[in-house]
Length: 437
Image (tube, rainbow, N blue to C red):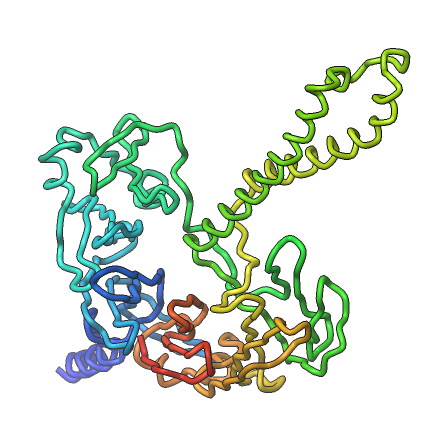
């Protein structure tokens, strides 16, 4: 009887140290995905969050071992206030969970490895609008045989194409289609399904505004600013400084489209010049013409024609390279032209805190517009964690602090770091709101 009582007591103590977290109400242990939704309903920040359910927790020799499983949830926050608007459970374990594909007007599109399949929800309330069964019951998806990929390949078979503003779906034979839910059209395509899930850093030691203007940090401990990789006369310096870069795929697509249009216009300009010369002097169309075939006027024009032809080739090459290139994320995340946001450290300790500063170079020199220190955000979460900075949070689960996300909308900076979400006024650097996730 004494042994049974002792065993029961130990079981109770073990279970007490691994309490079951409430998926809808307790703090998240990780953030998987986040984005801003802007629509007629309002502006919301939508996040896919992970809750870790510990089943055992053991400490020995200064190390803690935790085992368990993950559950997932989808949350909608009011961008004006940070208030939680709606939250739903998404399932347990990655193989049973749901991925967010993207948004169209008034809808968040998701794919689940369950009876919901492809489905959409209201961005504000997260209420279900349509599921795969309902979509398949009417045109244009009536009778459509949806692919059934393994959970590791969901995003290779289904996506929202940000450029086309349409969904891309795959059938059981592996063919791809554009589905426009507003126009209710389904069109087969050879286009590849875009991969918007590749890892991209939100920070860099160099950024560029256009093909002619780049700024960077030198290698000093207190990094100083450089213009086009050359030192400039400035007293500004930043401990472990890094620029915040734009990782919003929709804006990066717009930037690339604008750059392609500019290159296309320049390419056409040089092509028109080439055509004008060759129409009057067809000999310039031939690469192997001998000197004796040129007139005196044409001999005098050879250098001029060579110059405009080289300009055309240069621009055409730049256009082709940009067309093939992956979306670049070394543009600064900012609300005003020729300004940058810098993340830097308060000191060199393992528990140094984070400072954000906004730098303006529109007047031809670098000026600091504002600077804001965050005692609630450590500069290096991993080092701070090793020093026990997150012990109170660690006692409640198995949190991860490496997820970082930045975006901006309507002169506000939104950021997620160390399981917190904050909103900063980009005009004056004031903290508007802060919440725990």
